[in-house]
Length: 312
Image (cartoon, rainbow, N blue to C red; front, side):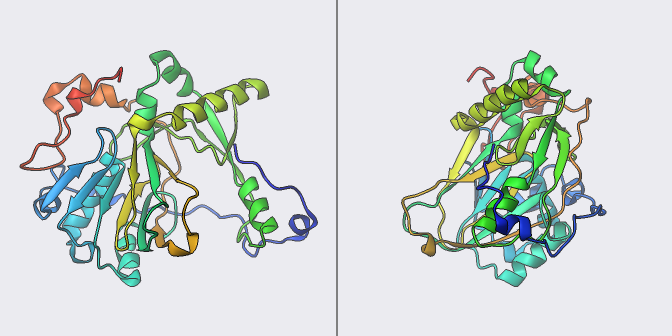
């Protein structure tokens, strides 16, 4: 859980220029319009690398600035399936990045997110992404069943206070929202944890001490998940596109000059998190049905979900 720097006079006197965000209509997810084989996108790549079994795919030989609308939809599906997709040596401009983002929806968080690195230090400044689909799948069936009935309390209060005390500003006042602890992805229909240690402050259905213990477990579960994570070393021109609905990410701190790191981020609105009991866990979808073994690379060997060892 994030901690804040105190209710100072600056915080008490501050008035956010914008009000609390109101409801908005979310456009249909473009991944729903994609060819499930992603033939157009994958055939246009010179190479497709799965960086880990659970999360992360790198596409080689593609320029995002030159994708067709069909390929853009297939890219959304690949991101939904693999959590995060990486590309290097991209010539995308800021205007082109914005145009690509708006193909998927209105530019704002928290569904698909794109980060394009303009400059990067020679070492340091890496980012780690963790699959929350895999985090849920690794839980025992008993804990999965328990978590499916719980809701996390999400709060922006700490980030609001810290921004103001740090000399910055917050455009909107802080809010609290209740969201399912387990959500179902609207495209893949896979269940995942929906946990963010920086904003989740309590579990709605539990007593305070019970909630503290559960949040501590979730934090340890996420930060010990090296086998469910992918780490990316940035270079100028590198791009990462990820699905905030099922992926948690964090920067690796320290050891580099932050003035040497500059990136441009765009993101789109996502739907309100929802739990669908008819959804499936990773193992239910793939491991128990070898006939659905899946390769992300047409014509080359990709990751076969049927080979996953749930006890790994």
